[in-house]
Length: 374
Ligand code: OGA
Ligand code: MN
Image (tube, rainbow, N blue to C red; front, side, top):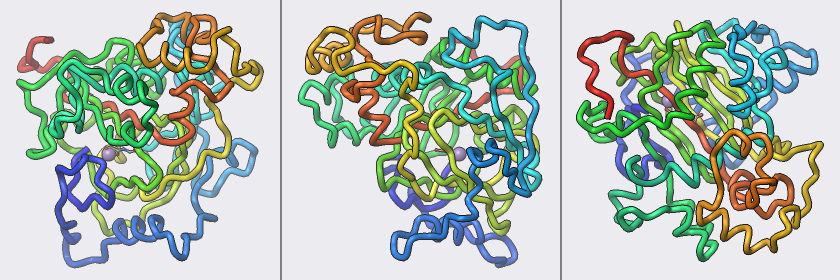
């Protein structure tokens, strides 16, 4: 993310904050106005024109919304392994007003959502990845934030985690990628991102950097464009888990009035083509209307794993889980990450907060200057 504007509630954990620049020719900053409108508490904004892709599914296609046909790659087993339902079942949409914006409406299974959310909150915030906690000295070197907080079940402390960067680390000060500051991009997330990119017509996608954002009830993300990548043709993939959000998508400058849409758990927003460099923002979190991370069919009781609640919480906090494909199919059998009892701390996290995984390709494919893999 490249914030060239004020962070209302600063997701960067306190680093980037500057006054928004006015659009050229002194034309009105409609992006900023839209942001302020949807962020407003009193009186609350009118949400009736927020595009709801759930309603589109029910047959009421909004004037601006078109169905989008995903491409189905050959490797059919990969979907299951990555916690996705088969693409034949996916609902995908594009917008007449914003060519290049594609919305894959929750292609994940419930277990898949829990798995990826778990990766984000439990496994990724720590060395060698970077977090906003590093500068604050909140986490002892080599420590695991999840374990650190859940040992005492401290949700308030857990909320201090605002972002994690993966792969080429985005430098929040210079707003650039530092070629010398790179850690391995998690291979499972790379596989997921590549597969998703293939489904939207980008078969040779190379996920090289990601920002994982953690939003709590009042968090917002101010209008910005993501233009720090050397390759700005490759799609930007944005995965959402947990609570819902109002997302604003504008144009190449701030004078274009944005459209507002709901992003819900499991949704994948793709910004490519003419929309790759569009302004966007998250002015508001919304309570999830359905807990898509729960298995409807698989009603798991609080004692589904035969362990008392606190023992399971501790087991999960200790990283006492495996991340192989079976986990994605049925976490409960692996002993520690139940699917429906509401006692699993990952599920608890999803019912309180929002996770956004923002994946980018940094370099053009085949660029010889590409630094060696770490
Ligand atoms: C970003 C971003 C959007 C979201 O991280 O650059 O735009 O939906 N995130 O959280
Ligand atoms: Mn962004």
